Amino acid sequence: MHDDDHQSVYDGLTGGDESRWAFGAGLEAPDDALAGVGAPVPVGVDPHALATYCLMLGDDALVHSHRLSQWCSNAPDLEEDIALANVALDLLGQARLLLARAAVVDPGVVPVLPAGSPVPDEDALAFFRDAAEFRNVRLVEGENGDFAVTVARMLLFATHRLAVLQRLTASADPVLAAIAAKGVKEVAYHRDHAARWCVTLALGTEESRRRVVAGLERVWPFRDELSRTTPVEATAAAQGFGVDPGSVSDEVEAVLDQVLAASGLERPALPPVGEVAGGAGRDGRHTEAMGLLLAEMQVVARAHPLGRW
Figure (cartoon, rainbow, N blue to C red):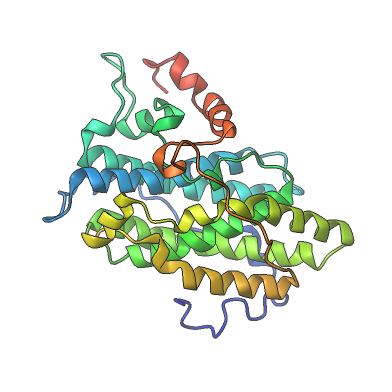
């Protein structure tokens, strides 16, 4: 694992200073957050494959961010309300950079808007694509459920994403490498925040334990999609700008084992969710929840495509 200064990333998980768990990575965005996204495509890198790979990572972050934002004013307490909002903002920032990079390296992925529309390319990708054009895994699009479901989803997603981002810091694409370097600090917090809540709920009351067990069972069938290697991801790994998601599986499993052991929980014995029409989220095959999520997220932009904000 990459946490070189700890024998186990969850040593002391149930003790120590708890104050730091409520506040995100504490990173301040630069004045021009999109500075540098227009860097040339490296020699030997397929622009369309790079753009599609950025969409995959960006859509994961965008959709998960939207789901987390729905907890604003609805979280169990004010401190957690702030924490989840910070996680959502971290992911939204990653999504903005990744979608902007996709638009730069392959303008053909950007939806065509009415003449005179002031909408930036990254916003066009967020608000003017239909569900079949999104490349996120289905794990992040499901309805929130109760707080324990959100904790379980964040744990699975952040554990895998952190392992991928750590390797992406060596990407042949300098923009992806820079986005990953910033994202590692953010997602390390997301993972550890979710892990701490998993332990807290599992070792709390009988009801809190029941809920976190149910939460894990609800999201667990969707986790295999995170490590399923698509042709685009295979190309990304072969050309040196991306990561084969299957290559991080051992590290991800080791971290999940540590969290479950600290929680006294068993792995859910559930099969992976099946494909739809021969594909999954990366192929634009989504659940019914995705269409409802996009209807809420995109309604204002689609109603006013020439609007200035």
